[in-house]
Length: 451
Ligand code: ACO
Image 1: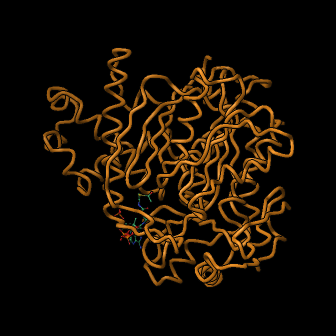
Image 2: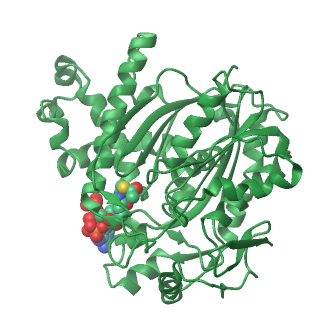
């Protein structure tokens, strides 16, 4: 099959948020720490009506409705998540409620977990299936979702919640480039969830940032090498029209973009550096792994790369800035934001870099080629126009005070794995088509309804 890639995309986030300026005040940190220091404006969160199953049911159902996809069109369904509410039963099996009533049970795939990377792992599995001898001509549906919550403290403002669904198949308008994917996988305890009784991770914030940047450097260098071997051409940031990053918080993404500019600089010959950038020559012999927290280098390259950042990456940060880190969907909310915020004529025919990172750690860099076809009837136009609900829904959300947000999280803590459980939150403000938890019975079985 030709041009395997993303044929449809749907994003879902909860209908309530907390304002980061109010959270700064509530937490007693200096004004600007979360909004300027981390680059976050609002943070979406789930009350007790939503869990990982409901988030994924909502986004999958909404995609199928919006694109008129029938259950029999799907031959593989993959879920990526790190929000574990059951050690055995997959979210994928819960999503089969959307297929079983139509006698469609011949659907491959199960759940994949590694922090924020699970969505990308699921996507790559789906692509591999379509490119394999097992493919039967049907489409694949990839769903990724998480409820990202942290215990009180410096990590809490970097939470978020939501889900993405993507339809994968041949002749796609967003084509995944073949033969040039680059991964970096290592064993590190930077962020993990060993306490199965809690929704909160154990985090070493500084180490997690260092790992993220190390993964980014390594994936980029490997990607450049693979392209060089395959096509004999040199990759730099100029090779990309847009670059998407997993976004734990938007400020880290700006620093990451600057980091790619720094690597380009390191890959430039000494001669060229002394001719073009004599004032930067001091940074040229430095060892890349000694630079993760070098403020001089960071400052110089953030400034140098700023015009490119504003052009190539800033448009992809809209949902990340408004909802926060959704974990597995994060980098795909970047794709949706890019598609919404750039004119379609500027998108058509372009190259998009993608960097996905999940602590622990697993990471991959790959690239997408956007089709040149962008007329009114094109598949690209269909995707872009189908996403027009996002801005409206972001604005239609209900603002919750930091006090009430904290109460919601404390209530979730108290009731985590408590049965029987009946949620208390109203369903009145949920977005149309959202699934909500009705109850968890004494045998831990969950039931859902749809608004
Ligand atoms: N105005 C403007 N900027 C401010 C202000 C202010 N009033 N106060 C602080 N800042 C800046 C700081 O200078 C710092 O900027 P810098 O990073 O450019 O130096 C930034 O705000 C953050 O302040 P820190 O003191 O560094 O923040 P802290 O250490 O308290 O927490 C952290 C940050 C570690 C990222 C924390 O939020 C965390 O642990 N998050 C979860 C882990 C995470 O997201 N890791 C990223 C990769 S892994 C993943 O995706 C989960």
